[in-house]
Length: 173
Image (cartoon, rainbow, N blue to C red; front, top):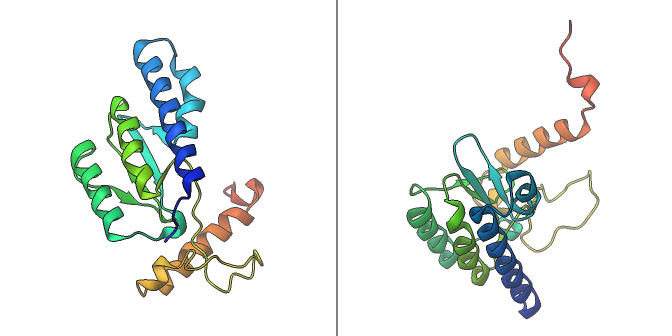
């Protein structure tokens, strides 16, 4: 499991406090949605049709039990009692109130879970495409659960979309 050092923890704490001020300015009307959009996107907060969605990065897709319990607490207190794991092994909450998002971010910092759009890649250990070595246990959570076929399927879909040009994706007329 990835652990923050003192620098990481301090950096995330400062980022959360900065975002807390930005949220306060948005709620007070000092920032309009166009001004607030790049700030919220940098912090993993997306505006959906009816509510905000907060994505929290899970480094290398690995969670300890205390992290999982804290995520369950966040789901119960700030969402509708559940969250969704993404194909990139992050978690997202679909119903947080804007005013609560900095508090959620505060709860994730001691857990070494990062608020924001950090991309955790689900990669097969013999990933011939990148040639980069995997970090210890990196991207292997699906394999650890015995879901080798799911991991390969996710990677196959991702490879298709990454390799497709817009011309190839157009339907035949």
